[in-house]
Image 1: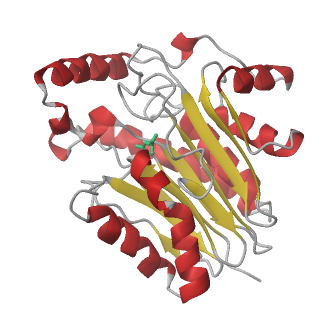
Image 2: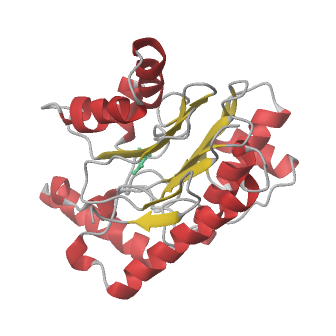
Image 3: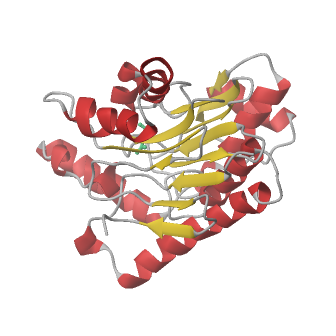
Length: 312
Ligand code: ASP
C-alpha cells in the first residue's frame, strides 16, 4: 500500500512581503486550503490521483487570487490566453490546451483532450471549439479579467517604455496553479494551469502545457508541476529532467528538484524565478522555489494539511 499524498502551488509570483496585508495572506491561505480539500476529498476515499489534481486545480482556476482561469493575467493586447495540462503517470496519457481564449476551466479541457482525442495538445481557436463541442463551459474574455491584473498590465507597459520592466515584482509578472498527487493504488498525476506572463506577446505559449517542461507524471518515478519563467523550463525540459535524474541516476526527489531550482536555473545568464511541487512514488514531497515565496500547500502521509507563502 503506498502513501497517499497531495501537493499544490498557486505560483511563485507571490506578492512581496511588504505588500502582503494580513487579510490578503488569509485569503491566499484559504484559497490554498480549499484547493487541497477538494483534491484530498478524492484521495482519502481511495480515488484516483488524476481526479484529485484536476479537482485541486479547478478550485484555483475559479478563484480570482491566482493567475489561472478567473484572475488570469492580461497579455500585451489586454486579452487573456490560457494554457493547461494534465498527465496520468499510470500510462503516460496526457492532454493540454494552449492559448485558449474562451474556456472557463482550461484544466477540464486538457483532460477532455486526453480522454476524447488522439492529440496531446490543442491550441487557440481549435482548443476553444473543441471545448465547446464537448459541452465545457465557454465564456467571454472579461470573465477572466480582474482589476488588479489590469493595473499590473498598465504598470508593466509603463515600465516597458521606461526600460525598467526587469524591476517588476514576481507578482506583477506572473503566477500559475498546479497540483501533484500519489494515490492509494500507487498512481501519480500532475496538473498545471496558467494565464502565463503579464504583457506576454499574443500567441505566446509557456511551459505549463508542454509535457515534460512544466508538467510531467510517470508512475514509479515522480509527478511535477512547475511555476516561473516558462521559456527556461521549456529549454531545460525541467519536469522531465527531474524525472530523468531520479530514474536514471537514482537521485532523491529533493536532490533532483534542488539541482534544477537552486542550481541550473540560477546559473549566470539562466537566472529564472522558479518553483515547483513534486511527489515521488514513495510519497516524498518537494516544494522548492528560488523566489521570495511560493503559494503552496500539501497533505502529507501523516494526513496533516499545511499551507505556506514565504519561507517561514
Ligand atoms: N510558467 C508560467 C509561464 O511561463 C508562468 C508562471 O508560472 O509564473 O507561462
